[in-house]
Image (cartoon, rainbow, N blue to C red; front, top):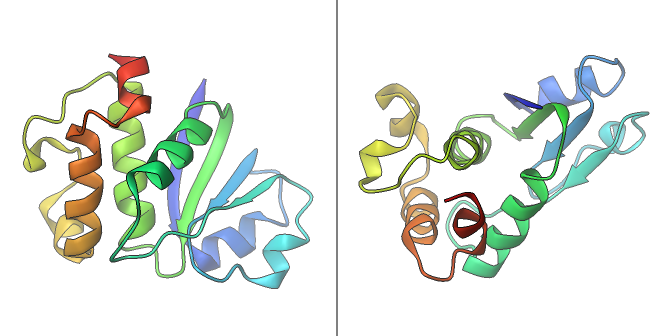
Length: 138
């Protein structure tokens, strides 16, 4: 079973010194050094707010869907990358559809803070024929 937590760089640094989570996924461009020395597994998968390939999304979500336990998905500020990736991952695991951008399980307040280019590219990936991950969960 996978429990998804979403947070920012400060959250990741704090939990890296505890046993509160089983894995930290850090989506920021530069990972804080203290997270690298964690006793728990850390996956650094840098995403850009404005441009990521479908292949990159396929790799990221194929890794995320294979994780178990409690996972913290975080980025530097905790308002764009980690929010949208957490929402998409929940939707994939629940086998929900991506018929419309507003079908993504994210509150309007959170959506306002997600980088529009990131949202557009990840939503296009969700609906794409090149999306290898969602095909597995349909």
